[in-house]
Amino acid sequence: MIVPSYPIQEVSEALQGLAAQGVYLGTSSWKYPGWQGLLYAPERYQTRGRFSKAKFEKTCLFEYGKVFKTVCLDGGYYQFPTARMLEGIFSHVPSDFRLSLKVTEDITVRRFPALPRYGKRGGAFNERFLDADLFMASFLGPLEPHRDQIGTLIFEFGHFHPGDWERGRDFVEALDTFFSRLPKDWNYSVEVRNESLLQPLYFETLRRHGVAHVFNSWSKMPPVGEQIKLPGSFTGEFATARFLLKPGRTFEQAVEKFQPYTEIKEPNPAVRLALIELLTAPAPPGKSRRRYLYVNNRLEGCALWTIYAAITGLAASAKAGVRGEPDPN
Image 1 (spheres, helix red, strand yellow):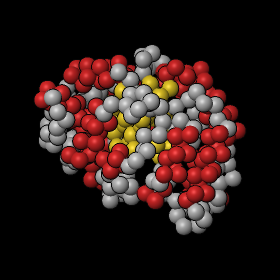
Image 2 (image 1 turned 90 degrees about the horizontal axis):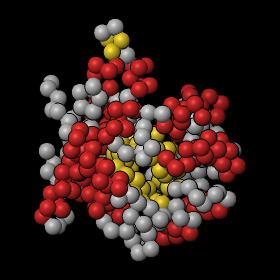
Image 3 (image 1 turned 120 degrees about the vertical axis):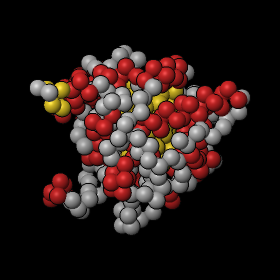
Image 4 (image 1 turned 90 degrees about the vertical axis):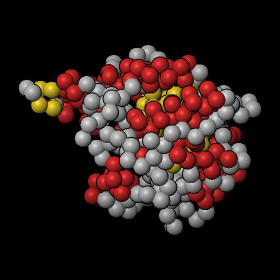
C-alpha cells in the first residue's frame, strides 16, 4: 500500500494559527508506529537497520511537537504523573505546547472492573474515588512546575452500571463536593459515558465550579453535534471535546477495523462538521474562546487525516463565507 504524503507544513501553519486564537487541536496520544511516513520520518527510529520501538516511543514526541501544539496524554489514566515522566515530555516540545492529561483511574473509577490487572481490587468499590487530597498531592503536585504548559485535566468516568449509584444525582453531588475542595486555577474537564447524566443539574454543577463538560464521541453517547445543542452544555470558561469512537461501535471493534492507523477507512461527515463547529463557533456569552479538542485514530482510521480534513473543511467554509461540510474523502 502506498501511503499518501501528509501535508505537514499546511497542517502546522493551520494549527499554529488556531493556537494563536486559544484553540488547541491535537490527537489522543502520539506513539503510533503507523504514523511513520506520515508525521514521522522512519529513518530517525532505526537501530542497526531495524525499527526500534524503544527509540521511537522515547523520542517521536519531538517530531509531533514541531507540527502540533497540543496532545492528550491518555497514559495519565493508568499511573500518576511523575517528575521524570513530565520532564521527558516537556524536554521534547516547545514552550507554547499544551499538554492535557486524563486523570488517573485511582481517582475516577467508582468500581474496579473484574480484570486481571486489578488483582484483588477487581469488582470492588474504590475507596479513593474522588479523593481530593490524593488528587492534589499525587496528580496536581507533580504538574505544578509545568503549570504554564498544562492544557486541561480530564476526569474520564467510565460507563456507570446499575448498583454503582442509587441515583444519577448522587454522582453529581459527589462531583460538587470534590470540585469544591480543589484549587480553582486549573482547567478541569469532566467526561461521562452515560447519556442519562446529561441533565440540567449536571451541567449546572459543572458551571458552578468552572469545569468544562467534555463533548465526547463514544459508544453509548449521543453524537457530539447533539451534545453541543443541549441547553447549558458549555459549562466552563473554555470548552473540551474528544472525538474517540463512532457511537454504537466498541473500542475493540474500532481497533480491529482501523489499525495500524495509516489512513481514513470510514469517513464520518457528521463528526467532522461537529469538530468544525467547535473550531469556529464564537464563545458563549461570558466565556472565552479557548478550546482543547482531541481526535483519536479509532474514530475514522487515522487522527492525522481526520484533522487535515477538518482543517481543509474549515478553510473552505471561511472562503465561502459560510460553514460547510468537509470533503469526506
